[in-house]
Length: 390
Image (cartoon, rainbow, N blue to C red; front, side, top):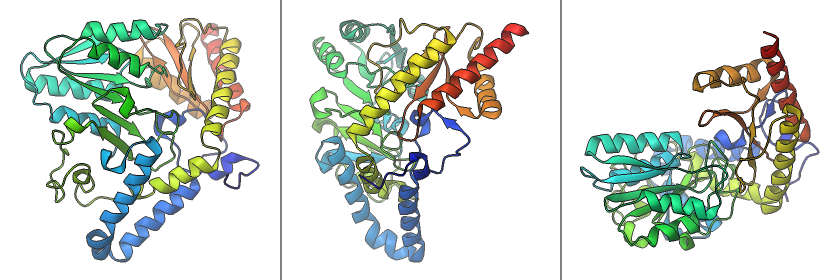
């Protein structure tokens, strides 16, 4: 393990006055990884011509190989992209959608992915179809809901391995099996934005055609680093959104260079994975899981809200807590609540408005302690009492 300080927060540049409970939102880059990223930037700026023409491609290939190994796939099966949203748009652009075609997403799907589906549907005359899931559905019901949503015109089904707003780990293999059992011809894309570093996926064994996951959330890379795996039949069908010098290369090398960019986030991937392993790897994930589960129970107990009806298979290191009635009263109040928690109480946590009910989504990471959840509970109670007194 890395030399773990007495206070793991010291390994990060987070504001120590803040209780930071949103690691799943944008990740947090360790100071050691930021230093590696800065060295890559300096290496380029020392001699930009040599770096970009002679050194960059090999360095990206090495980083890509490290990411592929971490995810348990061969290096020639995974491309690097900047985030899951980019990966999804890349696939949508390669489908050749036409009038009447259908794309299936769930009501728990990520907002920007849904927006991308809506845009491509509007352009092509296709339509979005929603698979409706209840948060307390079991694996069989989840799989059935997806299977019932597909039809003869379905071209793509997007399945979240971990839902963003509701922190729910969906049964991907069961869903894909139920979809394949329909005997129809469509692609399955797994949105695994929250998976790398939080879960150990079986990508090739999932039965999906496309799997895209962010390294910059739970695997500690700088932001803008994600991996996209394509099944063999899709590797000549999906092309980068940006046409650049590598576009004629075979997959995944054709994704390695999308013009003149700052590639230091990608190049820092091996260092980030070393940090993840150094703080304990899956053992640290287990500790974070225990911490956030206890935090969820504590905050719910303090607020007097129930955990009934929440996902029975939550993400390892994220949880939902139901808010008392009135703390949120619609999407328009989400930013207000978040702003007050941040400015007045120094607590960073995303409020969630989902299907006419308010929640907060909490996370657990190596730098969190039980006192962070205590501060959240204190803040929410203070705001609730203020509202009752008004």
